[in-house]
Length: 492
Image (cartoon, rainbow, N blue to C red):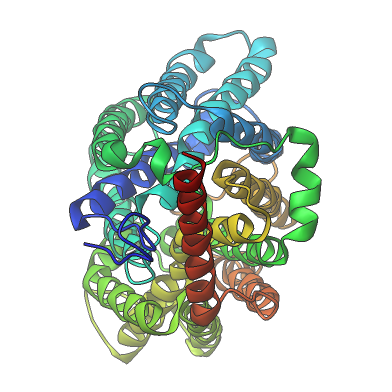
């Protein structure tokens, strides 16, 4: 099951395949919540009546708040020890808070007086982010107890990619091909139906995640199994300052997340498929076509990670994503009529679009998935270097920087579309395609994501935790545990 430095101290903590598969569903649970809130701009502007720039600013502020509270969330994780474990209670509490506030936002905001809507909407988003942070932080921190085997940690990416296809691709198909067709547009009944399905699935995923980590959520799997962590909140800066891999991974992953956030933003999808290509339902159909290729891409990248390490597969994926995004820009600049890209009359242009779009989305999403087990590597590096087991701190400091950067997505989109005249509402399906709208769509859908990925790759040049380094770190931690065990025997 695992190899040991002696008969009593494990060098490697291995998990069963189903445990990795189940625990990964915790990220799926929070992604379902994020997917639902991805359409909140249309609810807030179209039903509640709030202005475009107001909503963009509120969403950015909410993500910033999420990042600011993350260190405190990490502190709670590192100090938590209950009869139900360290991570299980936080999954339950986080999911209840997040799901509850989503229901309240969509059910109450539009009934309030106009003077109260902004305050209420903002307050609910803030509370939502507290619950969301509690649950999503467990995804990162919990990797350290689930497994530290170098061939097992990358497996998270396979399961996460499969589940994300279900959430984001399946969800987009569900919204664009079923809900829009059924309800006509982004109406209140559409949001009610979407929320019902999404939050029930989110709760089921959270329960399965608890099942997956239950047997591992014990003290013997907490780093060096010391009596609690001695790190206080005031020491966070010292840990960040002394952990170069954490710094570089945080910067790199933040810009990768920003790239995906801009490209995946609901408004950008409407601009690309609903206006530029003239068929919003195409977004769901194309997403469905890319499912199998995206899975094959994931399997390929994970095979690289299991042989050559997470860093190599991370950088390789980002480069392919950049080239593909740039290729899409040139494709649209060379095509006389963008609406010729259609599945009703498939030609070379449509084939090129689907191939490039699949490569761009498939590979650009990989670094975001790989970063979760990489955070566990960074946590192990800190344990080996300083003796501190602080996975909560590692994950939430990373999240703080990630949220700080990726929170810019709603504001960037809001500012850019505002420049071309969309100040009171966002572009909608069926709007006339103008030259400014054409250029803006290319910039938001492909240009800025490519630029963000380039920044991500640059930061990764200074990330030192490759496959060889991690093997040495795991060996060092095992030796420290073995020495502690021998010392205990001698003392007794």
